[in-house]
Image (cartoon, rainbow, N blue to C red; front, side, top):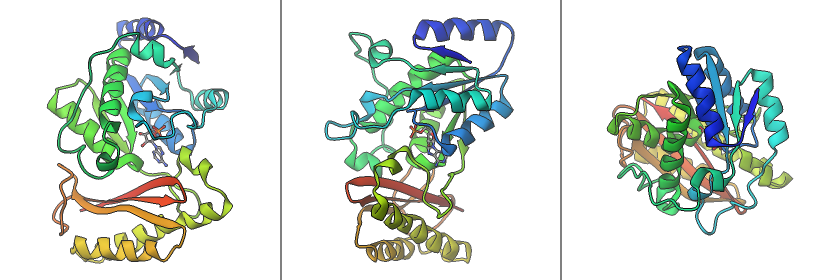
Length: 280
Ligand code: AMP
């Protein structure tokens, strides 16, 4: 596996692959890789000749009061996991390498970025769209793999690719969970033992609502109310949002009418966790 730290290294490798007519799958990550990331890499491995993983804690998607410095990192462990899956190249640039001394450009998607996590993380999706655009251009990937764990990100990137005619296919992958249902996340390492137990409430509340929706309940407002009620039973949990939105535009909806995303963000202590399900 090639460990690349510069844009030029990746571009050179990609030029050689393209010359040989090889297809490229890209998995963008912020590192500290776990089985959620591994599921994306394995899918990319199956569907492409070449797999590139980016491992970059992107500073532009963190707000001033967010956890950029504290974000967990373990590049050696990441390399081992990537190698075991058969990744061809891991791209691990510094912020200076990615953004240079001067950078005046960014990519912005309207509307889909305004609600849900965008409401409390105003710079987040511009940072995501810009870094993802850069990674698409550097890797010239045919396919890029994103987890439904970050459902808004998946919807926003899919919309960006459609609106701006990027030559790349976006593949959404299912949420990988711990045995007790908590969605795997690098941020779970911030939870102490008691908080970790309490965090199961997110999945518990969502599965209750998902089952009711599968049984025919179409009142999305009612389901959101019930999700909130379950979460409020957990003293360590504080709801940021519980929302139902249509999948296409991420606009608020009170009824399940077509593909609908139920998304939640909940603080367990100071740790903000997100989870969701999609129905219809
Ligand atoms: P991150 O490193 O947190 O930026 O995540 C990189 C990619 O892995 C994103 O597309 C995430 O949605 C995806 N991902 C993270 N956690 C999970 C999970 N538990 N299941 C599936 N995909 C995940």
